[in-house]
Amino acid sequence: MEFNDTDIHRLIDGQLAPEAQKAVSAWVEADPARRAQAAAWRRQRELLRARFDPLLVEAVPPRLLMAAKIGRAANNGRLRRVSGLTALAAACLAAGWFGHALVSSRAPVDILATLPARAAVAHRVYLPEVRHFAEVAAHEEHLIRWLSRRLATKVSAPTLLEHGFRLVGGRLLPGEDRPMAQFLYQNDAGKRLTLYVVALAAPNATRESAFRFEQRGEVGVFVWSEDGRGYALSGSLTREEMMPVARAVYDALNLAAKEPAKGPVIEPAKSPAVEPPRVPAADPRKNG
Image 1 (cartoon, rainbow, N blue to C red):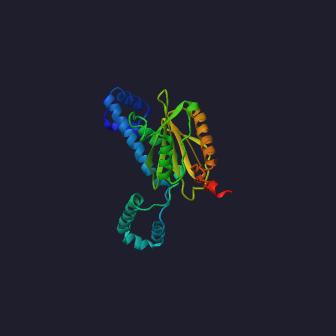
Image 2 (cartoon, rainbow, N blue to C red; image 1 turned 120 degrees about the vertical axis):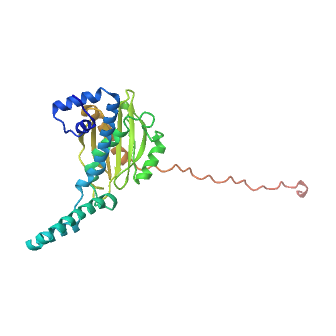
Image 3 (tube, rainbow, N blue to C red; image 1 turned 30 degrees about the vertical axis):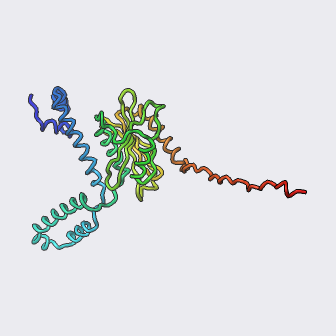
C-alpha cells in the first residue's frame, strides 16, 4: 500500500485508525528523509498550538456579547429581511475579533494554565540542538543577573549535581506579553532537563498552584507557582525519574527565595595616618 504526505499529516494529527497508524509509522521510520520531515511537521504543530491555544481561554469582548443580545431581541420580520446582512456582519465581527486577538491588546491570559504546554514545546524545540543548546553559557553569576534583569524579578538556577545534572546555560524566550527564562541542564548520559521561569502578573502574582505533573507527548512537565513566579521543569524522562529532581529544584528555589539579598561588602574607610608634630630640640647654649 502506498502512502503520501497527507498520510503523514493525518498520523501527526492523530486522525488514523490503529492499523493505519502502525502502517504509516513504519513507512515513515523506514526512510530518514520522511522521518525528518515528520519531525519538522510535528514540531511546527506544537509551536502553533503553543501560540494559539491561549486564545481559547480568552474572554469574549463585551461589544460582541452586546451585539448578540441586540440580535436576539430583534423581531422575526426584521431578521428575515436582513438575514443576509446579519450573516455578513457576524462574519466580519468574528474576523475582527480574531484579528484583534492576534495583533491588539488582549484580555489577560491565565499563564499558569498554558505554562505546561509552553514549557514542553520550548524543551522539545531545543532538545535536538548540539552546538546551540544554550543561548548563554553557564557563567552562573552573569546568566542569573542577565535573566533577572530581563524578567524584572529575581531568578535562580538550582544546583542539580547531586542528581547528576549540570547547568549548561540558559536563554531568554518570548511569552504572550512578557519575557520568560529557560535554564538548561544535562547529565553525562546526554539526558536533558529544562527549567522554565516566568514572572506572574496580577491576579496570578499572589497565587500559588499545586506541585503537579503533566505528560505532554514524550515530555513530562512538573509545574508550580510560588512567590510571584511560575515554574515548569521539563524532560524526556519518566515521572519516577523526574520526581526527585523536581523536588530538589522546588526546595532549592524556596530556600533561595528566603535568603536575604546580599549587598556588596564594604570595607570601613581607613583614616589617613597623622604624624605627631615635631618639637625642635633644645638649644644647649640657652641653658645655664
